[in-house]
Length: 561
Ligand SMILES: *[C@@H]1O[C@H](CO)[C@@H](O)[C@H](O)[C@H]1NC(C)=O
Ligand SMILES: *[C@@H]1O[C@H](CO)[C@@H](O)[C@H](O)[C@H]1NC(C)=O
Ligand SMILES: *[C@@H]1O[C@H](CO)[C@@H](O)[C@H](O)[C@H]1NC(C)=O
Ligand SMILES: *[C@@H]1O[C@H](CO)[C@@H](O)[C@H](O)[C@H]1NC(C)=O
Ligand SMILES: *[C@@H]1O[C@H](CO)[C@@H](O)[C@H](O)[C@H]1NC(C)=O
Ligand SMILES: *[C@@H]1O[C@H](CO)[C@@H](O)[C@H](O)[C@H]1NC(C)=O
Image (cartoon, rainbow, N blue to C red; front, side, top):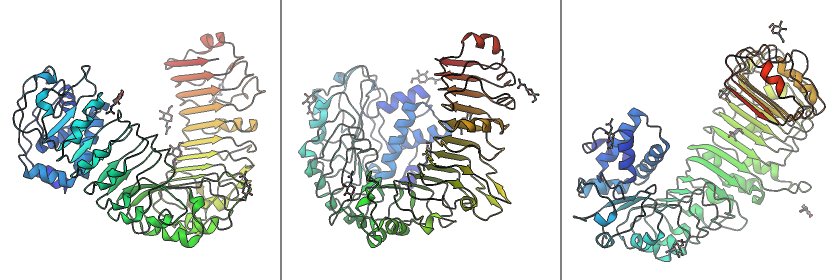
């Protein structure tokens, strides 16, 4: 709908936009200290977007601004309707205005934006103070004094008030027509209950409001709500009651499971959620029936799912936890899956083999009681795999790879971390493994002494592992970056010829090897080296480098001793 409308509008207003002009225009969209181009029409938006896409602007300020513009365009369909039907092409005089004192209000102002980068503080002059016709306000301001002004704009559809806000007045409910409210990154701790009277609100963005500890009671009455952004609201401890009654809800970035009725995971049952969802405090799900009631399997538009258990009490593992995870099976369209803190010892069938056959990225963190890794090798599109904190796993073998001819056919990045008891890692017997693997990160594996030879690896990290593992560095000959960190506190010289094969190595980092005395002969063959970092290797003689390093390519040496 938004798309159609956007393309249907003729773009006339903005001609030859160049970067600085666009920026100037962008921040001053509507009104600002550098008020130069005040052309608040959708055709402008369209041409800006088109222009930006064609020219692929990459200045951060511009892309941020464009992103906001797009957000508004996509989220507030009704707003666009009104843009189209109202006096759309209203233009405000295009004169250079030095400060808002000089702004003459001719006709109605519908769209306003402040330039938060402006060196001059912005204040509303007498004329502007009388404005009551605003439909949209985008941007932020130094001055919180303008808040009362916005609260008088009873026709306001779109309001973004940025990070200076500490408290939202109760009179926010005067803005009955509000469709889009963005208070992301502000300092608010609570929202007044009156917010829940904004019955037309479709988008409420509170992302990264770090201090927000509670959402208002009665949010279940905000029936128009389609998007609730609460990503990065780390102080939030629970959801408002009855989120499940918001049947239009399409994006909900976070759900914190509670215990009582109206707070349980079953609130998610009827919601057709899209994009990403994180479910926290799964400890509060009591059995598989409750878990199944979340109906994750029915959420075919969900792209990324993160399941998080909170419990630190390792001595106490609830009996039902395995049934709970079993009941949380997502739809097979899922692309990204992360499961953190699962204390069961059984791996549910839906994680094994290729039940979720579209998965591209998996992260399985702190599965402390499982003795074997799940069979993931057959997933055809899996690109990124993070395995962390599986303390009970002693070996990795065929069970991980499965019985296909090629295991992990698409895997590019593999991170294996904090495997306290892992002693052995073998690839699949009688088949090919990891044909595309380029990034391998082995960290905190104190008992692992050998890794398989995987020729495709280009970026290798070895951090805080068993000292024996350092020799594995010799094998992959296509390395482009290599990090060796905290591998052997006693080591005074690297094993002979350790780096002799790495003619393509561009970046080498050696850190936290406190007794390493010299790198004599090690660096001779590194003819492609561009960047060399040596950190916290206290005993290395600095002087050695000036004579040893004569690589033409070398552009950066970083020494932190
Ligand atoms: C870009 O825009 C600025 C500000 O409007 C203008 O001064 C400048 O001449 C423009 N540059 C080009 C190359 O069009
Ligand atoms: C605006 O901020 C100042 C401090 O910066 C504060 O004293 C004042 O109460 C705030 N006003 C409103 C309306 O929030
Ligand atoms: C762990 O849970 C058990 C059973 O609920 C409880 O008795 C014990 O006190 C808990 N331990 C800690 C450290 O919370
Ligand atoms: C896997 O680890 C990388 C690096 O830490 C991270 O960027 C990525 O988001 C992780 N993947 C998931 C699904 O958590
Ligand atoms: C691998 O290392 C090269 C060279 O340091 C670097 O340019 C590249 O971004 C790295 N790739 C990944 C996936 O980290
Ligand atoms: C450099 O590489 C060649 C062959 O690849 C090898 O014979 C030689 O010993 C290496 N030099 C060092 C100092 O490792």
